[in-house]
Amino acid sequence: MTSHFLELFDRDLNRLINEINSFEHEENLWKVTNGITNSSANLALHLCGNLRHFLAKELGGFDYERDRDFEFSGSGLSKKTILEEVELTQKQVYLSLEGIENNLLAKEYPIQHFGKPMTYAYFLIHLYGHLNYHLGQINYLRRMIES
Image (cartoon, rainbow, N blue to C red; front, side, top):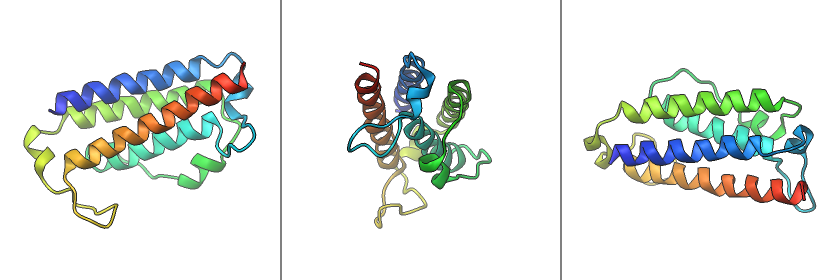
C-alpha cells in the first residue's frame, strides 16, 4: 500500500513541476484574476510547505520549519527557485514514504489535526487530496491568465 502512495505523490508532484514549467511568462506565476486571492506561485509554495511539514518532517524526520504566512504572502521568487522547492519537496516526500512500513498505515496518527483520531492512511489520503485540489487550481489559473 505504501508503494501506491509513493507512486501517486511522485506522479502528481511531477504534474506540479510540469504546471510551473508550462507558464510561458514567469511573471504570470504571481498573477491573480478577479475573485482569486492566491497566485499559482503561492499555491505551489503552500503545497511544498504542507507536504514538507506534515509528511517529510512528521513521517520522514526531515528538519523543516514551516513559514505558512510566506506561503500565501510571499512574492517575487523566480520560477527556478519555486521549481527547486518543489523538487526538494518531491525528494523528501519520496524518501519519507519509502521509509514507512505498510503496517504503520493502520495505526493512529499521533496528532489530531481535525479534532478526531485518524490513521496514517487517512491522513495520507487527506494530504494527497489537498495536493490535487490545489494542483487543479494552479492548472486552471494558468490557463485563465495565459489565454
